[in-house]
Length: 394
Image (cartoon, rainbow, N blue to C red; front, side):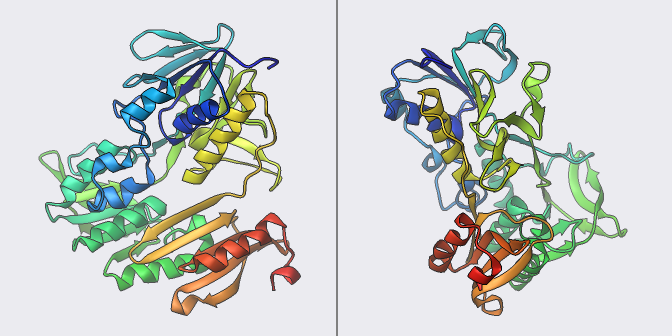
């Protein structure tokens, strides 16, 4: 792109989309800005949904990323409650759910992800958690004091199980893998996460598939497990991962794989960028393609895209950062945590649940994790930045 575009359309009115608009204005962009969202809500933050909003410690309004007045100052046209339905790259035109079309000079795709589902879960009492409305509906259900089954022990499922348990509810956490958060942090840390949940009274049924659901009158009454047992349930949360929200882009010509595939400059096609949960891009720091569903990445990638749009283009090569809060524990992490990585404790003691550990591949530090140990973790981040060897890490 040789000149700054006069008309930027951003599809996805969440953290990535709004941050792109904000950063464009901060960099002096004076052209037309349009932000399209499929929800009616003003842009809001998602991490508190499974924690503070679900627990009731935050009012829903607190998750708004910017007030209506502040959005007006940003001089951005909001098109809310309209899902994108198609893209014509040649005509540079975006189709919306109401049949209208929006032209653009530059397009940013930030449509996030859609929760995966399980068959047979179209029942009252079965919930998913992606949106603010989802969180409020789940909280209302939990306030009735039900027996709760959470299907899926990744970040979302483990966080919701912790909140429900702290509300005094009877909670069972189910996952086909042997320990919670195995995909995120491997077996050693997964064992610790499992022990933490058991200590707080959550029942774990790990290593067990869900075979089906029982119901009465259209409402869920139980969860059938692969070993033949049945868990009584009044409320079920299905948290079995997400898929990139790219269905509306099929046939558009954009490269789609595990998300919208971009260059290391977040560009999917001439004048088209993708960022946040939906984007798959080559991260030159790690020498691999990645797609991250992390809040910090949403901000950093949006800033990179905005800079690229105004002509300050450079490779996007962040050190990923993410966290999870469960009970009185904060887990924070920098970098990547691939299968088979060797785990080495750098400081603290896992038995005391306060430590920092490095994850190494071929004796190179690719990630560091802190369990209630934030200061040391921040210092350890440099090991990932420097691609430190085992000798340096020791």
